[in-house]
Image 1 (cartoon, rainbow, N blue to C red):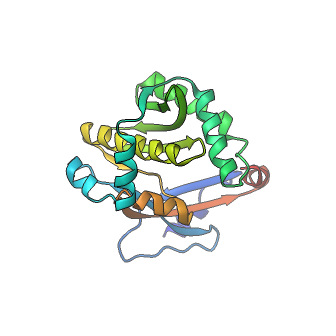
Image 2 (cartoon, helix red, strand yellow):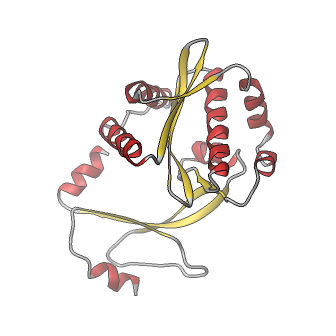
Length: 217
């Protein structure tokens, strides 16, 4: 049924769709690649004490080290945040995606207009060392992007920022979605917060200029 539905859609250069899986049913399509992926989520019904009890020992230690050392502030300085993101990619010996500097400012502008997102930066002795961008709707708060400087202090600051964002999600009575990654290191970091892996189907296909866009992305 799904393959028939997808085949009936108009042909476009970029087709990228995510769907919640149906229990005990695996979808297949002869025309569209279908991958099973995972996000990592804290449900909205848990209280913060319960959530924090699920953090692993290393994460709890990092947060304790960070609690009294860093200052937080909501910021509109997207350029500083992009520099932190660029630093994160460089540490992983990866090239910063060229679209990042275009997409993040537009997303942040949308958040500001609709009052549904926040950029928070963490500083140590007046120096900004980490930042995260989150957005939310009535059901879920999403961790959309993060960046940090090099060093253990920035790691602790990043962890504390996420703990703060989870707490804010709890106060809004929403779940918190880390926006899944299939990268083993990133997935392990998300799971250190005790988040639950949630499967989803990812269906994508590129044609024509869409293939060029995918290569650049």
